[in-house]
Length: 212
Image (tube, rainbow, N blue to C red; front, top):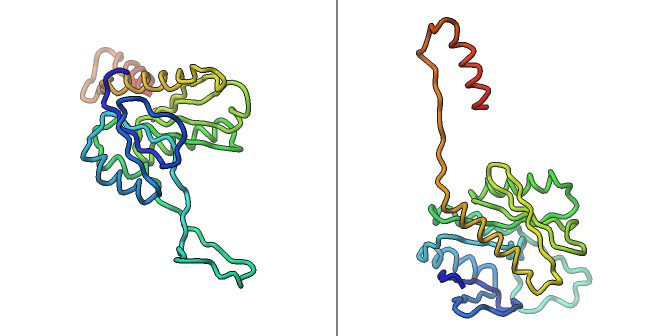
């Protein structure tokens, strides 16, 4: 609606209508999406990337071709942990604004936030949206936008409302404003200064307190 070039990578069985003008690339498996991200996304060079969920945390360690042996009373299926696809984005998208999502269950709020912040640090993300299962067992939706510098901004909406798109609009607006922000750091150094009638040391202590 705002004139952006939007591209959606979606699973073949994904529910929901796709807005007009959105280019869709369909995938069937984890490997399909991994290949799309490896080839297509770096070529596209998007301004913003929203990675709403892990596609699969585990996959078969020893895939079986054909049919399981029915004589095996208690077959054992071995799984292997799959690499997190969100961790592969930053090396190829140095200038893109990356937004990930993190869902937790059973964690208190500080622990859940710490996990979201750890994802920001590990994958070099610009934001992570935290969803706690305990916050969304009924009633209005509650999520949290977690920033790399430690901020947490509430994100709320009503699942029963036809206007549930509001949290998505708020998230987009926040991310877009932040993407356009220029960050800088000021450094104050008093090294090499002396004298000033004993004023220097209190000034140095005050500067250190302000900078901390």
